[in-house]
Length: 139
Image (cartoon, rainbow, N blue to C red):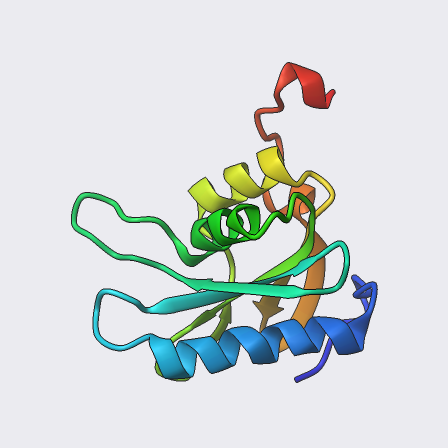
C-alpha cells in the first residue's frame, strides 16, 4: 500500500498500521451480511480502537460510529486518524455521508484514510464534506 504525496499523512507508518488493524478486524470479525466493514482509529496517545458495523434493516451503526462509541467507553476523547476497510478483500473505503458529518462534528481535526484509484491518502475530514453544516460552537 502506498500513500499519495498530494496529502501527506502525518505519520505514514502509523497510518498504515491503522489500515492493517482495520484489515485484520475485517478479515476475522466480518462474516455474512450483518458485519461487513471494520474501522480503526488512532487516539491522541497513540492507541488504536477498532469496531465493526452492525447492519440492520432499521439502520444499524456504521463501523466508524461503533469506533467512536468504543473509544468513549475506553475513556478516549480525542481521535486523530481513522480508516474503514470492507470485508472480502475489498480494501479501504471512504466513510458514508452520515459518518462524514458525525466525524466532522466530533473530531473536526480528524484525518481520514481513503483509497483513491489504488492510492491511499490521508484527507482532513473537512475536505470530505465540503460546505458542511457547522455547529455554532465550531466556528
